View (spheres, rainbow over the protein chains, first blue to last red):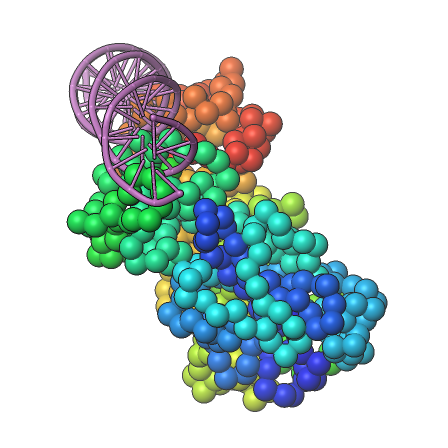
Length: 248
Length: 248
DNA sequence: ACAAAAGTGTTAAGATTACACCCATGT
DNA sequence: ACATGGGTGTAATCTTAACACTTTTGT
């Protein structure tokens, strides 16, 4: 959502400012993002919202995430602010979304702050907003043409996520509490979009000390039962701090 | 500058939105930033400005830079957007800056987009704006308490610059066309705030191929004359692209 | 002649990559 | 029993880090 039809100046929101969230989840070895389908259309967009006068921009992003996923204490990171002049075409939007919101009173332009979130897929209850019929996970590889400049925003979010990965371990927020080494590896493969050698991966992860092997295996997989691991939160956060030595 | 006393809604600027620039230069082995001293005060701030309705945010940042430095085609990068509720205290500002702008009509809050720029120190003609008496280079280690939340913005800019350095070579925009290896090294030392071994540094830079040694030395230094180098722009940009393999 | 900075090579340690076979499980 | 994915070690290469003396220049 880019802005609000009630976005006349003087109300309780910051005019011409919006935020958009790229909410990443991980399921079945695939990276997913949450998308919204606008009412009575086949038009999709990223979840977004406005910034109220009496909340910080970070709080606004957390509010949007809470509304769409039901989750609080989400890993949420601002990655870029999009301020080009022609981020959307009012005529095109009037055609596509006119029956949901009249764009008559839309701003001629808006600036949008981009956030990405990493969440545990299984914990999310996707929840559409008042403009949309559907909120659902979409495979990153199957994202359709989106409204506004949201494909570009998504692209930049993925870049930022990959870059983040070079400084910080990843997974604490995207995986369930107990996970297997192949699951963690497939997460890295999905984010980096490349194959990783399982021996080298395991070596690196174990050396970093961010995970602890449990005395448990995951059963019911029709194959050899993989060990379960959990993150060593303290060590994990230490590595987050120095930022340094981490890529796969 | 946070916003504008003419910032009433409906004029030609985006209300409650500003931008702030951290302009880095390098001189005498020290990192410097451009600061503004507000009229008839000893209060300092980062250069900043507003975003016009008919310009992109990037264009607005370029405009501000042009106005403060005289330079165009500057290396300019957005690094963070600052959206906390209490980025400035109107009462305090009224006391300090009331004689320059009445804060009566200031917004209760504004969101500011942070950019950093890397410029060739020697090419800059610092130029105050209408609210300020002085625009000058200040040693990064001697930055005073700044107005607004500008010390925090500066801190984040430095972090971003360091992080950038891990992905991209640095220097093309901060050094003159011809430079010596020790100059380049001191730039890295200044940015990273640590000592670097000159042998290892030279090896790494030469291997990356981003510089070319000229058949010239720099004379008049009362010591052994260092070779001059210039950047190999194509190779430099190649390394910028892959981002990968670059830190010191 | 001296002081100050520039220039340069080797070695050891650590990190990264490449690579292939056996094992455990559910069907 | 078999098909499937899980689990594991070693060797070669590359990268990084540590380290000190000679050269050149202006004064």
